[in-house]
Length: 295
Ligand code: UTP
Image 1 (tube, rainbow, N blue to C red):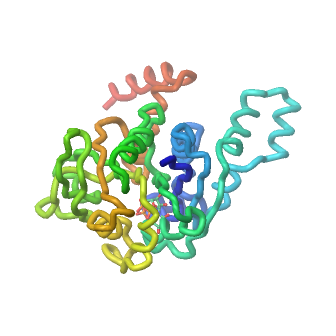
Image 2: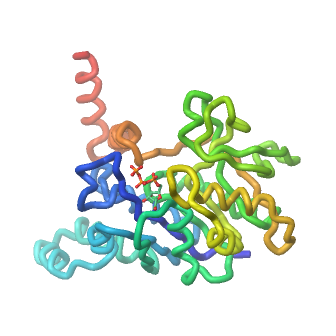
Protein backbone atom coordinates (compact mmCIF):
# COMPACT_ATOMS: atom_id res chain seq x y z
CA UNK A 1 0.00 0.00 0.00
CA UNK A 2 1.59 3.26 -1.11
CA UNK A 3 0.73 6.39 0.86
CA UNK A 4 0.58 9.40 -1.48
CA UNK A 5 -1.32 12.13 0.29
CA UNK A 6 -0.21 14.33 3.16
CA UNK A 7 -2.66 16.43 5.17
CA UNK A 8 -1.17 19.39 7.06
CA UNK A 9 -3.58 21.14 9.44
CA UNK A 10 -2.58 24.81 9.76
CA UNK A 11 -5.87 26.39 10.79
CA UNK A 12 -5.30 26.77 14.54
CA UNK A 13 -5.55 30.14 16.27
CA UNK A 14 -1.96 30.10 17.50
CA UNK A 15 -3.04 31.95 20.64
CA UNK A 16 0.25 31.25 22.39
CA UNK A 17 2.02 33.50 19.89
CA UNK A 18 -0.36 36.46 19.85
CA UNK A 19 0.01 39.15 18.64
CA UNK A 20 2.53 37.66 16.11
CA UNK A 21 -0.17 35.28 14.90
CA UNK A 22 -2.90 37.90 14.59
CA UNK A 23 -2.46 38.06 10.81
CA UNK A 24 0.07 35.25 10.19
CA UNK A 25 -0.37 31.53 10.89
CA UNK A 26 2.10 30.29 13.52
CA UNK A 27 3.29 27.74 10.97
CA UNK A 28 4.67 30.68 8.94
CA UNK A 29 6.96 31.90 11.76
CA UNK A 30 10.56 31.71 10.53
CA UNK A 31 13.29 29.38 11.74
CA UNK A 32 16.18 31.60 10.62
CA UNK A 33 15.08 32.19 6.99
CA UNK A 34 12.52 29.47 6.28
CA UNK A 35 9.04 29.22 7.76
CA UNK A 36 8.37 26.21 9.99
CA UNK A 37 5.84 24.81 7.50
CA UNK A 38 8.46 24.60 4.74
CA UNK A 39 10.50 22.13 6.83
CA UNK A 40 7.35 20.04 7.29
CA UNK A 41 6.46 20.03 3.58
CA UNK A 42 10.06 19.12 2.72
CA UNK A 43 9.87 16.18 5.14
CA UNK A 44 6.61 14.98 3.51
CA UNK A 45 8.07 15.28 0.01
CA UNK A 46 11.27 13.45 1.03
CA UNK A 47 9.03 10.56 2.14
CA UNK A 48 7.36 10.42 -1.29
CA UNK A 49 4.21 12.34 -0.36
CA UNK A 50 3.86 14.44 -3.49
CA UNK A 51 0.25 15.46 -2.85
CA UNK A 52 0.00 17.96 0.01
CA UNK A 53 -3.29 19.31 1.36
CA UNK A 54 -3.20 22.27 3.71
CA UNK A 55 -6.22 22.64 5.95
CA UNK A 56 -6.20 26.40 6.38
CA UNK A 57 -8.28 28.91 8.22
CA UNK A 58 -8.15 32.63 8.77
CA UNK A 59 -4.89 34.40 7.89
CA UNK A 60 -4.08 31.76 5.27
CA UNK A 61 -2.89 34.26 2.66
CA UNK A 62 0.77 34.36 3.73
CA UNK A 63 0.96 30.57 3.58
CA UNK A 64 -0.70 30.36 0.16
CA UNK A 65 1.63 33.04 -1.20
CA UNK A 66 4.67 31.25 0.20
CA UNK A 67 3.88 28.07 -1.76
CA UNK A 68 3.09 30.00 -4.96
CA UNK A 69 5.16 31.79 -7.59
CA UNK A 70 5.93 35.50 -7.18
CA UNK A 71 6.48 36.87 -10.69
CA UNK A 72 7.61 40.32 -9.66
CA UNK A 73 10.18 39.09 -7.13
CA UNK A 74 11.47 36.39 -9.49
CA UNK A 75 11.88 38.91 -12.33
CA UNK A 76 13.85 41.23 -10.06
CA UNK A 77 16.18 38.41 -8.89
CA UNK A 78 16.61 37.22 -12.48
CA UNK A 79 17.60 40.73 -13.59
CA UNK A 80 20.15 40.87 -10.77
CA UNK A 81 21.33 37.39 -11.75
CA UNK A 82 20.91 36.31 -8.10
CA UNK A 83 20.31 32.66 -8.96
CA UNK A 84 20.68 31.39 -5.40
CA UNK A 85 17.88 33.61 -4.08
CA UNK A 86 15.82 32.91 -7.21
CA UNK A 87 15.98 29.20 -6.54
CA UNK A 88 15.14 29.78 -2.83
CA UNK A 89 12.10 31.84 -3.84
CA UNK A 90 10.85 29.35 -6.44
CA UNK A 91 11.61 26.27 -4.34
CA UNK A 92 8.45 26.16 -2.18
CA UNK A 93 6.17 26.48 -5.25
CA UNK A 94 7.89 23.54 -6.91
CA UNK A 95 7.99 21.18 -3.95
CA UNK A 96 4.71 19.31 -4.38
CA UNK A 97 1.20 19.39 -5.77
CA UNK A 98 -0.35 21.72 -3.22
CA UNK A 99 -4.08 21.76 -2.44
CA UNK A 100 -6.18 23.66 0.09
CA UNK A 101 -9.23 22.86 2.18
CA UNK A 102 -10.82 25.40 4.46
CA UNK A 103 -11.69 24.83 8.11
CA UNK A 104 -14.41 27.41 8.69
CA UNK A 105 -13.95 27.58 12.45
CA UNK A 106 -10.98 26.15 14.36
CA UNK A 107 -13.12 23.50 16.07
CA UNK A 108 -10.15 21.27 16.89
CA UNK A 109 -7.51 19.08 15.27
CA UNK A 110 -9.99 16.25 14.67
CA UNK A 111 -12.30 18.66 12.88
CA UNK A 112 -9.37 19.94 10.78
CA UNK A 113 -8.54 16.37 9.68
CA UNK A 114 -12.22 15.77 8.83
CA UNK A 115 -12.01 18.76 6.45
CA UNK A 116 -9.59 16.64 4.34
CA UNK A 117 -12.19 13.92 3.70
CA UNK A 118 -13.24 14.94 0.17
CA UNK A 119 -9.65 15.33 -0.98
CA UNK A 120 -8.29 12.12 0.58
CA UNK A 121 -11.19 9.84 -0.35
CA UNK A 122 -10.75 6.14 0.35
CA UNK A 123 -7.01 5.81 0.79
CA UNK A 124 -4.61 5.60 3.70
CA UNK A 125 -3.01 9.01 4.21
CA UNK A 126 -0.50 10.84 6.37
CA UNK A 127 -1.13 13.76 8.73
CA UNK A 128 1.79 16.01 9.66
CA UNK A 129 1.27 18.75 12.24
CA UNK A 130 2.50 21.98 10.73
CA UNK A 131 4.16 23.27 13.90
CA UNK A 132 6.39 20.26 14.60
CA UNK A 133 9.72 19.76 12.81
CA UNK A 134 11.25 16.29 12.54
CA UNK A 135 14.48 16.21 10.54
CA UNK A 136 13.68 14.68 7.13
CA UNK A 137 16.93 12.69 7.21
CA UNK A 138 15.61 10.67 10.18
CA UNK A 139 13.15 9.01 7.74
CA UNK A 140 10.40 8.83 10.34
CA UNK A 141 7.54 8.70 7.82
CA UNK A 142 9.32 6.01 5.80
CA UNK A 143 9.67 3.94 9.01
CA UNK A 144 5.96 4.46 9.73
CA UNK A 145 5.13 3.25 6.20
CA UNK A 146 7.14 0.11 6.81
CA UNK A 147 5.14 -0.54 10.03
CA UNK A 148 2.02 -0.06 7.87
CA UNK A 149 3.34 -2.57 5.32
CA UNK A 150 3.81 -5.18 8.08
CA UNK A 151 0.77 -4.56 10.26
CA UNK A 152 -1.76 -2.69 8.06
CA UNK A 153 -4.35 -0.44 9.75
CA UNK A 154 -2.97 2.87 11.06
CA UNK A 155 0.33 3.96 12.58
CA UNK A 156 1.08 6.65 15.17
CA UNK A 157 4.43 8.06 16.24
CA UNK A 158 5.23 7.78 19.95
CA UNK A 159 7.89 9.23 22.19
CA UNK A 160 8.76 8.47 25.82
CA UNK A 161 8.35 11.65 27.86
CA UNK A 162 8.98 12.39 31.56
CA UNK A 163 5.94 12.35 33.87
CA UNK A 164 6.24 16.09 34.44
CA UNK A 165 5.54 16.73 30.72
CA UNK A 166 2.97 14.02 30.04
CA UNK A 167 -0.09 16.25 30.50
CA UNK A 168 0.91 18.25 27.39
CA UNK A 169 0.27 15.27 25.08
CA UNK A 170 -2.15 12.58 23.97
CA UNK A 171 -0.93 9.44 25.76
CA UNK A 172 -1.24 5.81 24.59
CA UNK A 173 -2.04 2.59 26.44
CA UNK A 174 -0.13 -0.15 24.63
CA UNK A 175 0.57 -3.87 24.23
CA UNK A 176 4.05 -5.01 23.17
CA UNK A 177 4.77 -6.70 19.83
CA UNK A 178 7.76 -8.87 18.92
CA UNK A 179 9.57 -5.69 17.86
CA UNK A 180 10.56 -3.55 20.86
CA UNK A 181 10.08 -0.31 18.90
CA UNK A 182 6.56 -1.18 17.76
CA UNK A 183 3.54 -1.43 20.06
CA UNK A 184 -0.14 -2.08 19.55
CA UNK A 185 -2.26 0.81 20.79
CA UNK A 186 -5.25 -0.19 22.89
CA UNK A 187 -6.38 3.17 24.26
CA UNK A 188 -5.55 6.89 24.19
CA UNK A 189 -6.10 9.76 26.63
CA UNK A 190 -5.77 13.43 25.67
CA UNK A 191 -3.62 15.53 28.03
CA UNK A 192 -4.08 13.34 31.15
CA UNK A 193 -3.08 14.29 34.68
CA UNK A 194 0.23 12.50 35.34
CA UNK A 195 -1.53 10.15 37.80
CA UNK A 196 -4.04 9.04 35.11
CA UNK A 197 -1.55 8.62 32.24
CA UNK A 198 -1.72 5.03 30.93
CA UNK A 199 2.00 5.06 29.99
CA UNK A 200 4.90 7.40 29.31
CA UNK A 201 4.30 7.16 25.55
CA UNK A 202 3.18 10.48 24.08
CA UNK A 203 1.65 10.82 20.61
CA UNK A 204 3.73 13.04 18.30
CA UNK A 205 2.52 15.02 15.29
CA UNK A 206 2.90 12.38 12.57
CA UNK A 207 0.07 9.96 11.78
CA UNK A 208 -0.61 7.39 9.06
CA UNK A 209 -4.35 6.88 9.07
CA UNK A 210 -6.87 4.49 7.58
CA UNK A 211 -9.67 6.51 5.90
CA UNK A 212 -12.15 4.95 8.37
CA UNK A 213 -11.05 7.83 10.63
CA UNK A 214 -13.35 10.18 8.67
CA UNK A 215 -16.54 8.27 9.51
CA UNK A 216 -15.42 8.15 13.15
CA UNK A 217 -14.66 11.89 13.22
CA UNK A 218 -18.11 12.64 11.83
CA UNK A 219 -19.53 11.04 14.97
CA UNK A 220 -16.99 12.46 17.43
CA UNK A 221 -18.47 14.95 19.87
CA UNK A 222 -16.44 17.90 21.19
CA UNK A 223 -14.11 16.69 23.95
CA UNK A 224 -11.36 18.35 26.01
CA UNK A 225 -11.43 22.15 25.59
CA UNK A 226 -14.75 21.92 23.70
CA UNK A 227 -12.78 20.86 20.56
CA UNK A 228 -13.27 17.85 18.29
CA UNK A 229 -10.18 15.96 19.36
CA UNK A 230 -8.28 13.69 16.96
CA UNK A 231 -7.26 11.65 20.02
CA UNK A 232 -10.91 10.77 20.77
CA UNK A 233 -11.41 9.48 17.21
CA UNK A 234 -8.10 7.56 17.28
CA UNK A 235 -9.28 5.83 20.44
CA UNK A 236 -12.35 4.55 18.55
CA UNK A 237 -10.13 3.56 15.60
CA UNK A 238 -7.85 1.60 17.95
CA UNK A 239 -10.85 -0.36 19.26
CA UNK A 240 -12.28 -1.21 15.84
CA UNK A 241 -12.78 -4.92 15.20
CA UNK A 242 -13.36 -4.44 11.47
CA UNK A 243 -10.54 -6.29 9.63
CA UNK A 244 -10.76 -3.74 6.78
CA UNK A 245 -9.94 -0.95 9.25
CA UNK A 246 -7.16 -2.89 10.99
CA UNK A 247 -5.37 -2.10 14.23
CA UNK A 248 -3.48 0.98 15.33
CA UNK A 249 0.23 0.49 15.97
CA UNK A 250 2.72 2.92 17.42
CA UNK A 251 6.33 3.38 16.34
CA UNK A 252 8.50 4.49 19.27
CA UNK A 253 10.82 7.24 18.12
CA UNK A 254 13.81 8.34 20.18
CA UNK A 255 15.21 10.90 17.73
CA UNK A 256 15.03 14.63 17.44
CA UNK A 257 11.88 16.70 17.10
CA UNK A 258 11.29 20.39 17.49
CA UNK A 259 7.99 21.64 18.86
CA UNK A 260 7.63 25.15 17.50
CA UNK A 261 4.00 25.44 18.62
CA UNK A 262 4.82 27.11 21.94
CA UNK A 263 7.17 29.99 22.64
CA UNK A 264 9.92 28.16 24.57
CA UNK A 265 10.08 25.34 22.00
CA UNK A 266 10.10 27.84 19.17
CA UNK A 267 12.99 29.80 20.68
CA UNK A 268 15.14 26.71 21.31
CA UNK A 269 14.44 25.50 17.76
CA UNK A 270 15.59 28.80 16.26
CA UNK A 271 18.81 28.71 18.31
CA UNK A 272 19.57 25.01 17.67
CA UNK A 273 18.96 25.13 13.95
CA UNK A 274 20.84 28.43 13.60
CA UNK A 275 23.94 26.81 15.15
CA UNK A 276 23.80 24.08 12.47
CA UNK A 277 23.76 26.43 9.49
CA UNK A 278 26.67 26.25 7.10
CA UNK A 279 26.53 30.04 6.52
CA UNK A 280 26.08 31.63 9.97
CA UNK A 281 26.52 28.58 12.26
CA UNK A 282 30.16 29.09 13.33
CA UNK A 283 29.81 32.82 13.90
CA UNK A 284 26.49 32.37 15.71
CA UNK A 285 27.92 29.71 18.07
CA UNK A 286 30.85 31.92 18.91
CA UNK A 287 28.51 34.87 19.63
CA UNK A 288 26.26 32.58 21.68
CA UNK A 289 29.17 31.29 23.77
CA UNK A 290 30.20 34.84 24.66
CA UNK A 291 26.62 35.87 25.28
CA UNK A 292 26.05 33.01 27.74
CA UNK A 293 29.26 33.86 29.63
CA UNK A 294 27.61 37.18 30.50
CA UNK A 295 24.86 35.46 32.59
P1 UTP B 1 -2.36 23.41 18.40
O1 UTP B 1 -3.34 23.21 19.46
O2 UTP B 1 -0.91 23.31 18.73
O3 UTP B 1 -2.54 24.81 17.64
O4 UTP B 1 -2.73 22.44 17.19
P2 UTP B 1 -3.33 26.10 18.03
O5 UTP B 1 -4.71 25.76 18.50
O6 UTP B 1 -3.20 27.00 16.85
O7 UTP B 1 -2.42 26.68 19.20
P3 UTP B 1 -2.80 27.59 20.47
O8 UTP B 1 -3.09 26.61 21.57
O9 UTP B 1 -3.97 28.48 20.12
O10 UTP B 1 -1.55 28.38 20.73
C1 UTP B 1 -1.80 21.61 16.50
C2 UTP B 1 -1.90 21.84 14.99
O11 UTP B 1 -3.24 21.65 14.53
C3 UTP B 1 -3.71 22.79 13.84
C4 UTP B 1 -2.81 23.94 14.28
O12 UTP B 1 -2.73 24.92 13.25
C5 UTP B 1 -1.49 23.26 14.58
O13 UTP B 1 -0.66 23.15 13.43
N1 UTP B 1 -5.14 23.01 14.18
C6 UTP B 1 -5.56 23.04 15.46
C7 UTP B 1 -6.05 23.20 13.14
O14 UTP B 1 -5.69 23.16 11.94
N2 UTP B 1 -7.36 23.42 13.45
C8 UTP B 1 -7.81 23.45 14.73
O15 UTP B 1 -9.03 23.65 14.93
C9 UTP B 1 -6.88 23.26 15.76
